[in-house]
Structure formats: structure tokens, C-alpha cells
Image 1 (cartoon, rainbow, N blue to C red):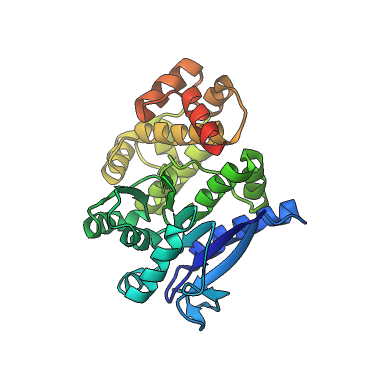
Image 2: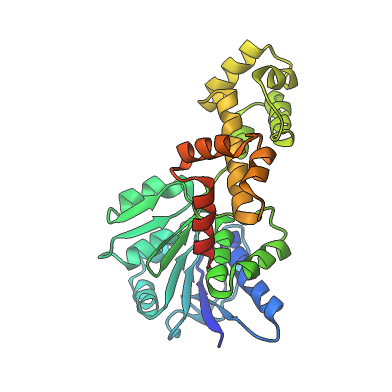
Length: 321
């Protein structure tokens, strides 16, 4: 029997927050056809088109007032979320539907609406990293995860911004249909990697690309392309056409950590991805990430994440199951 999943949208919703998860669940239906795993519907406050932040007009399948029971209520994020919170009639209907849903899911700033739906509950929520302080201030009863891609708090699931909604959807798909199905969906959607909830919303590489000047881009690309090889400040400085001393000083000033500490962060992020998405041995991963030996990888990994690589992989597998 298929699960009924309702996506609540409103004026100034975020298009990717809807399209990403919607396509992820729809892909399961395609892969299982003719069986329908999820019956997907869109819901809004009125029987009129709503306009997304980017200007896309969408006519929902039904209104939240006419909605009875859902297996999963998915609340999409967007600039218009605050207006929804202050609409007492809409919030009353959302509370009724949420109370009868097996899962309540928020994407990005949809967490603000979810927090308002459960004022008496102590929830742990994730949202877009740019809005975590606002969420914590506006809703003191909520524990906000500022870095995690997604979290689960009993029947309430929440994700960080934009593409993190796809990662959360894949995690739910894994719970319902197994990790292999989630992996198939990720491959079908041409995702580079299926990320676990414990991963940060933004990577070290992305942060470096945003923070450092174009002159350093050669060094960043060199790190990414040679992460399995021995790297030194001298090698990286050469890519930026700077002396090692000058390179180290500017890099540390801009990033808040030394070049070699940054390299270690990138290596650990790649190790986490490989642990989650492959069956490679710890020895193989230690070589591919430049640590060279399992003991060194295990020591650095445990120092960073308070769990060794084997335990991290087991935890991820249990989450998927």
C-alpha cells in the first residue's frame, strides 16, 4: 500500500525545496513501477496558484483545509514561511494534519513552521545554516543543529537548506525501502555522493572556494586532485606562485586554520563519504585519502568525530536500515 505524502507550499516557497524531495520520491515510484510506493500531492492554503521565490507559479493539487490524513506531511521552506506562521487559520489546519501524520518533515526554513506547530514539545531541528540563530531565538524550545544536514526528532524530520532536502529524502527512502533503493535513486538523480545526516551543510572545499581568492584556486584544485598523495606547504604554495611562508600566512589568515590542517579536513570529509557510499576496506580508504595506514586514519578520524571509522560506518548502516 502506497504512502500518501503531502507537500505544503505557499507564496514565496523555495523551488528546490519542493522539486528535489518530490523528484526523489517520484523516482522510487519509477523504479518500482507498476507499484506506487508514494502517492505524491501538493497542498496550499487556497485554490489559486502560489508563486515561488524565483517566480515559478504552481497550482497545488488540493488545499490544506480539505486534507484529511497523510502518512507524511512535508513542509517546504522559503521566504514566505513567516507569513504562514502568522496565519492562524492555515496553522490550525496544519496542526490538525500534522497531528494525524506518521511523519512530519521540514525542508530548509520550513523548520520555522514546524517549530510553531509544536510549541509545547522539545524538538531538535535542522535548517539552513544562515537561519539557525534566528530559529533558536524565535523558538527557544527548539534545539537547533547548526551544521548537520538533517536530523530526526521522533516522528519529526528536518533538513538543512536546499539540496539537503534531497539527502533527507534519500534517508527516509532508505528507511522505507532499504539502502540499495536509496543508492539507486541517488544514482538516477546523478548525485555525486549520498550524504549522511552527520555531514556538514557545507564542505571544506566549498568554504575555501568562497573564502580564498582566485589565485589560490590552483592550490585548492591540486589538493582535490592529489588528496591521496603526500602534500606539503611547499607543493601548495607552488600552485599559487607564492613563497611557502607567504602562502601559509595568507591561507591561515583567510581560512582560520593552516594549509595542512585544511588538507586533513578535506581528507576526513572524503573518508566519511567513502565510508557511507562504498564497501571499500578501511585500509583502502586510508590509502585513497592520503592517510596511508588504517591506524593513522582511525586516530585522526576519532579525534575529529569522537567515533572510529568502523563505528561510523556501522552507525550509518543502521540509520539506513
